[in-house]
Image 1 (cartoon, rainbow, N blue to C red):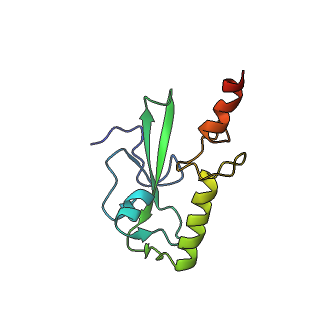
Image 2 (image 1 turned 30 degrees about the vertical axis):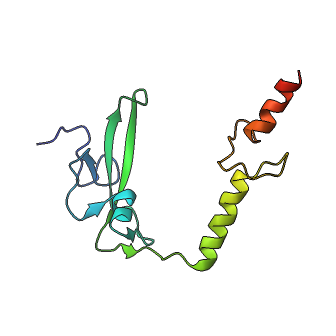
Length: 125
């Protein structure tokens, strides 16, 4: 029998059926598990949740929402237009706003420019 803290299958305490980590019933899956099976929630409501205490995030309780597998829909395939939009967005993340060159890597958001442009003021001094 799982511990009573996060075991609430009827949803009386938390408003949703709640299960401890790794103890969810069959037929329910997280978004990541759905994606691994080639599925998506498809507009359905959250069916249940998993709660667990996290040692990494100081004294916090983490949550993962569960969706029903029988109501999940197949993922939508990528169309040529979606591939083109994704390629354009990734190219914009690699293009330096100062020199206009494709850096070949995603620009760090902390600098906002490529490494060569970020080092240029330090080399001039």
